[in-house]
Image (cartoon, rainbow, N blue to C red; front, side, top):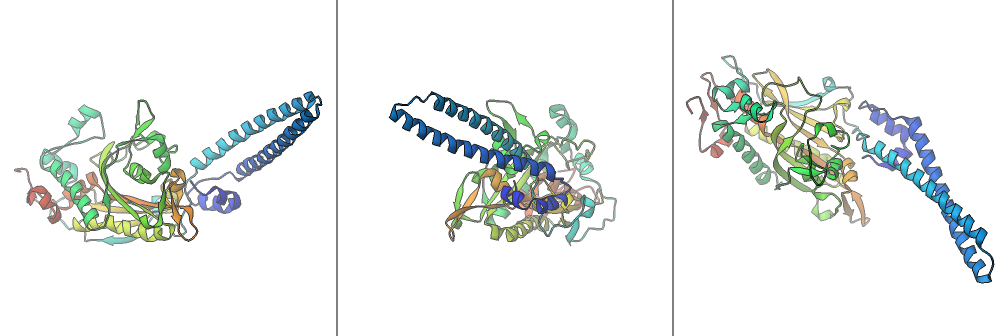
Length: 427
C-alpha cells in the first residue's frame, strides 16, 4: 500500500498521481473520514485521561472514608463512552484500511501518460525479424503436426484453456525452464528457490493480489484459506514478509520455476487459440529485494536478465514502457518484453518486469535496518518473468520453423535435448 502519512499530508498530490492511472480518489469522502478519525482519537484520549483522573479521585475519596457511589457511576459512564468511541474508531479505521488495500500504487514520474496499451512506449527493438520464403505456421499448427500439443485431451481432463504436451515438445518445455534457471543462477547471480504452489491469503494480500483480484484466483477449500499461486512472485517475495533485514544482506536475488494458476476472469474470448493465455502455465520468475537507492538500477538490470534469454534463443523482441493507465495494480513502473510471433505477425508479451517501490513491502511488513540511522525502513521489491515457459516454447516453434515442417532447436537448448538439432514429424 502507499504511505498513509503521504496520503494524509499530500492528499491532492496523491490524488493527481493516481488519476494518471485512471483511479479516482474521492477527496471529499476521504477528508471527512480523516476529520472524523482525528476527532474520535482526540475524544477517546480525553476520555481516557478523564477516567484516570476519576480513578485517582475515587482512591482519594475511599482513603478519606467518603461515599464514592456517584464517582463510581460517573466513572462507569466514562467507560461506556470510551467503549462506544473506540468501537466507532475501529469501524472507521477498518474502512480506511479497506480503502488503502484497494488503492493502487503511485506512478513513477518516468512512466508515460496514457489510458491504455495504445499509449505504451517502445523503448527498444532487438533482433531481426526473419523473412520466411514460405507461409509460417502458428505454434498450434506446428505442435499438432508433431502430435505433441493436444488441447482436446486437456479439455477432457480439465476443461478449456489447458494443454497436454508430449514427446519432443514436452522435453523442449522442460529444456527451456532448465536453461533459464541455469542462466539466471550461473550468469546473473540469482539464488534458486523451490516454493509452495499454494499460499495463505496473507501472502496474496502482501503482494497485492488480494483483495483486488480475488476473482482471478483459484481458492483451495481446506482448514485454512489458501490459493493456488498466480505467479511465483507471491511465495518468493513473501519470503521476507515480517522480516527486518541487515543492510549487508541486500540485494536479495531469487529465481524460481513454478506452475502458475489463473482463472483469467474477464478474459473470455481473448487469446483462446494456443498457449498464450492458459489457466495453468509455467514461469521462471525473478525477484529482487533491495534498498530504495538500489531500486531503479535493479529494475533495469532485472529487465536485461529477462532479455538475455530472448537474445540467447535468437527471438526478436521489443521492450515497451507501460503507460500509467496500463500499469498493474501494485506496479510503480513496468517494462513489458514482447516477443515476435511470425504465425500471428505480432509482438506478444512474454515477460512483465516491474518495480513496486515500497508498496508490497508495506503490505508484507518487510524492512531493512539502515546502518546510518539504525532504524528499520521499507525495502523495495522488483520482479519479472524470466521467462514465461509456455510462451517461450510457442515463440521458439514459430520463429525457428522450417519449410519442411521441422523446427530447428536453438543452440543453447541442444544440451538439454540430448544433442538433438531438429524436431520433425519423423522424430
